[in-house]
Image (tube, rainbow, N blue to C red; front, side, top):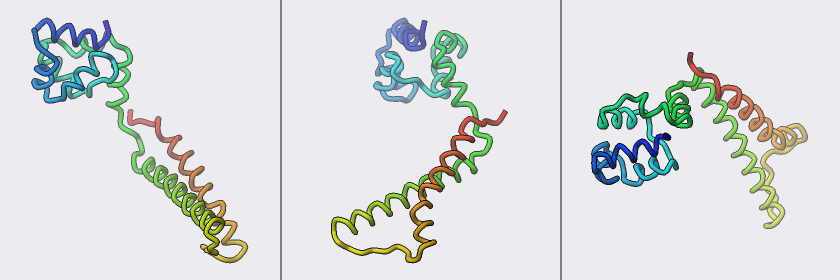
Length: 152
């Protein structure tokens, strides 16, 4: 039996509506509905509250649903290098921002007839043309390399 079915069964066994259950665990009725239909899963804190409320072990609630079990395991993991991950994510976003600035500048130059030059000279122009791409590649690769590294 999957988690949503188990939750609905336990709720109905006690004669509670989705609203009554949601009030008992301090969530919205829509959240309970999504859990019961399998559209979403609760956090580990809510799962603990549900197990206490229903008088069953967390194992009884989770074992039947592999997808929920995997979500709980993933949620409990901590990134090994969160500051580096943030750095690489920021680097990627900086590259996106610079690319957008470059595209807006080129668009204004072309469509509005302006002649905005961000920098002059051959070498700085080369840097300005490829810097956003380089930042996006470095940031993306760095972030991707760290996203699955967790504290053991």
